[in-house]
Length: 317
Length: 193
Image (cartoon, rainbow over all chains, first blue to last red; front, side, top):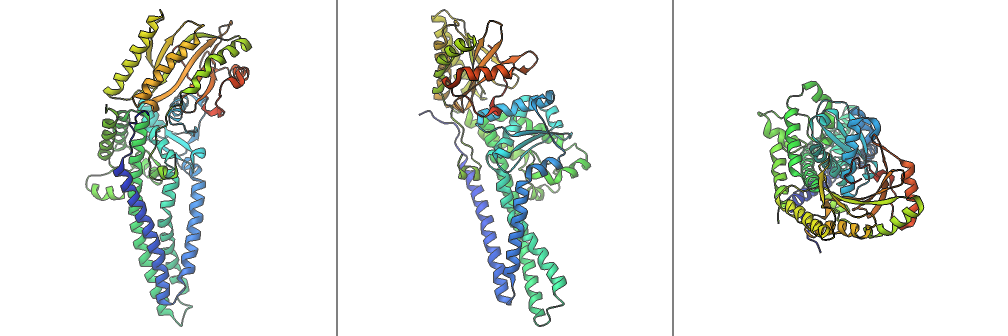
């Protein structure tokens, strides 16, 4: 039996598992609390909770199914064929080789006309995946760096990150809906309930408070999970191509350019952040520790550090 | 890849399938009889090099191994070239009637890489054919799939799809062809083609 050089990173796996477990725990606790509040105030919170879960689920399935179309449309990206020009041919050639190495079906390939150097992969599963690179990325990166970035994106596809992150954000969606529902029923329903007005107001206030807390906690957990999944994709991508240094140099190049991009472009790209190869929001030093907590991507230093580990692993005898 | 692996973001590297390569000599006879394409005697292995000393050592060993076996039989030394995408091609040139030993050469490269734990780096292997009108055709073996596909380049980065499909039809069941046409990727300028 040939030996393998591709041992998984146990620490990363463990941290990811704990994060996902906590998300699940918060969700269960949330539902239990809502029902508990209902029981305590003799109100009908289960109906509201049920309605929010169904509505949230619908939004979830919708965004999962249209993830590729939404992402492509908001990046103004165009699907390209290999015959559409030298840049399209180059992008296709790199994707072809990555797919052949990783034994994955070839995704659709798109180019977004933006000077910001970035790439993203989306689509609900391997067969519906789209990989998109911006013209700025294609212009700045050499072939092996481009390969590193696209291998990272293809790892997101292999890890089903769109599915995982969409399901993870379910909790935040439901909590967000609950806040709104509680607020509106307070606003419009309050006047009609004369007999137990006091009770209902208390109930709605409790729901609102719990939902806000759950929203905040789940938001932080989702961001944490997203950062872990970025590291996992970096790792898999670098192992696949066998060139962690090419990915490192791409990261340094892209992050360096990122800071120089004018603000207008950054704001336009913000909703897409979670899908991107590198986040479009520049970190300023004053809010660095806080923005670390909120950011969808790990810091450049952290990513380079993890890639150093891959490099050492690959050069072992 | 299992459900748990994708949930935890672990990618298992795909090991190459090596055995199907040996069906090639038989298929070449069928191809020559049916379409007039003869092997040119050159074939190559394409892999993605890994950075670091340990892969370079393995790569050098493989080259020495191939060179010693081919010089013992009076063949040409192995050529090494790098393509635009950072992949390494080892080209072995044999006499055109000796496809069997060419395949053995290619297999030697594969097993050295696999034995040293670099099996997942193998991309494809290519054996070149040519007919009387100097039309070029390659049979490309995809390691991760264990399947073949034909590739017929024309001038100016165009492919002769009709010829490719004709070759597939002629060889028929003698080779396992890649059913997913999206994976028949072009290898422009592959050394030895």
